[in-house]
Amino acid sequence: MWVAVVHSGSFSAAGRRLGKVQSAISQSVATMEEALGVTVFDRAAGRGQMTAQGEALLPEVRVVLASVARLGGHARALEAGRESELSIVRDAVFPETVLVEMARLLASQFPDVALRTETEVLEGVVRRVESGACRLGVTGADVEVPDTLERTHIGAVQMLPVVAPSHPLAGNAPSDAALAEHVQIVLQGAAGGTNPDRAVLSPRTWRVGDLSTKAAMLRAGLGWGNLPAPTVAADLDRGDLVRLRIDAWGEHAHDLGLSVIHRRDEGLGPVAAWGVQTLRTLCARP
Image (cartoon, rainbow, N blue to C red; front, side, top):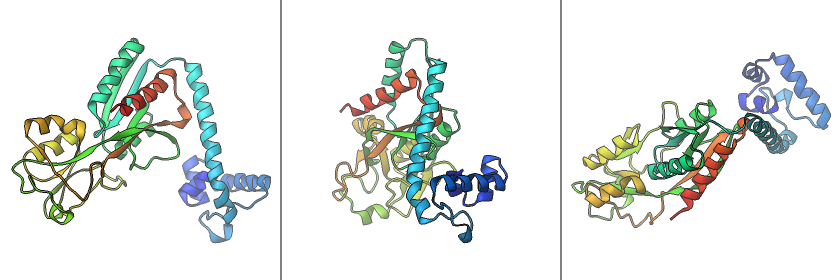
């Protein structure tokens, strides 16, 4: 209830969120304050504003809640036994080759376990995992993840700035100012998303909802943009795209960190735990 008040902004909003009347929230919080011996919320300030003591204790409250959620999730996973399906939703920038290799290993390690995969962009991954639609999610480090989800860093993917060979920027070492003069094609999250654009340097942007459309527009010479190195490797080999050499950026300036996420309250069964570890191992390979 404490955290619900903080997230919702008031006791009444927390009650609506938890399906309880406001008086029940107020009484429970008051009982907790009496047990702790400190005042957590400043009632005079209104809207559930915390006191200095409350601000200091809140991080520890989050740790306790996360531990309880993991404990319950682990217990339920043990009770259920081994999963019959592994469902994974990945960000579009996550290398498909890594997913395929994990699927090959899954078939060898757990031949009777089904695999289901989905592809989303940015916060779309978080929404699929948070709703319970997918067991695991692979998302970028710049995507906001709520406290209800556990996050494990697994590696990074190199992002390369590219253009078509016919584009005016091709063959040059453009400055930031030169890049800003041309259309940048950007991968856009779902409507209502709050995450910042990845490495957007031009005020002239075209926004697309999937990686294949972005790559197709870049091949057509309609702009410049960043693509994952594994995705663009074949285009570079064929000469359909060329890499932009940007001295100010360096070799790995816009590499994207990757994380696996899952719900804390569900824990990890043996197959899902194997999936997290396998993804970490595969992403650590050069």
